Length: 255
Length: 257
Image (tube, rainbow over all chains, first blue to last red; front, side):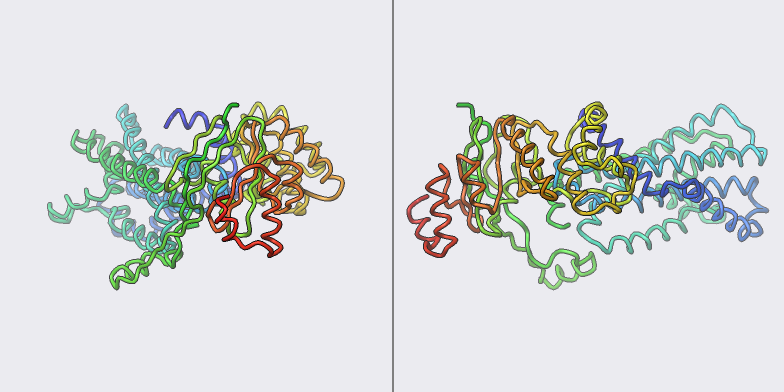
């Protein structure tokens, strides 16, 4: 696949440029907006919830931001990714190019967004007086897992979206559900042990928890926790890749 | 003689039925009620032919004969359901020129994107970009959004980029006439150059005169079935008779092509 990617590098670059130009409409404000939107979200959540949870959680802003940061990257990547294949139907029905390129290029702009938000996040971490430690290097692990996880889910969703156009609404509902179950603004301490374990079935929660463990608790998660985080990513990417391979020549009939 | 393209007993099916645009909810309902119906439709049905180096093949047939579908299989966009296609070199297609451009991008960006889609390299595009501008006469528009261009300008750009190809197997789907009178002449000349340069060419056209003039081989398709394949003259005459209503298709089939 890498060899193929190399051969199509020029196309990939041009697609990235196109997706980027389209996303931000060539305006500085467009770019600023994509950073401002999650920040405003954060502000509202903070205003609403800091009274409820802020007293029990140290560095509540950072706690909240960690959740919001990962969740907004997740929704951005999957929502844009879902459209990527169908949007490019005009291309892949005419020219024989690898179809996953469209999703990958779409994900690049989401990733850049995430990177910018990550910088702002660390600024918040510094301002809030959370000590920076060498353990922060471990954050690379959940970031890579998250990228792969989002790519895989994007592959799955974009394939499904070609077959079922109502996926968009379904996915909207599902992301809402995932949002509530990711403990973005609340803590799960008051739940029983069994329920706390069930939260681990939610990949998003696992990645958010990883961030909080490193930054707020200053502890490195267990090996099992690492394996769990990686398993979600591999599973999602595996299913996505399988679907693209299997339906590679089927998509054409549905567009 | 060296065979450039060999199509062995190729069949290509399309799915038809009301499965499209129904959504997951409807899809599940129909499966539960066992009302889900998908039929396959043979767009190309057991077609075989071979094309040698230096030859030019014309594909003829009425609408819905499966011409474009066959081309899609040759370029690799579609997968044949049966049979095989052996390609003796790179395949490039100049089809439906103006589609696939993005209205929000500038002329320059679209040119590069299209070049990338056609498999050119960035260096090649850097080298030839000036030439593309000159040929398409769009220099004054190069930084304008593509949607501000007229349809004629759009197809001029498409042609200018596409005509840079130097594939071993070239596929032309009714593209020989582009733009206004002056440009048409220019593009026809360019086309001739590419054809002469290419090792083998396939042309789909509704103009029988054009086929007679350019092609030495003809493949006649009718509703997906291969009616005839061979030298241009005899088949073109038969096809003309068929079009005029003098010759029923069954009679040609009975002759065995």
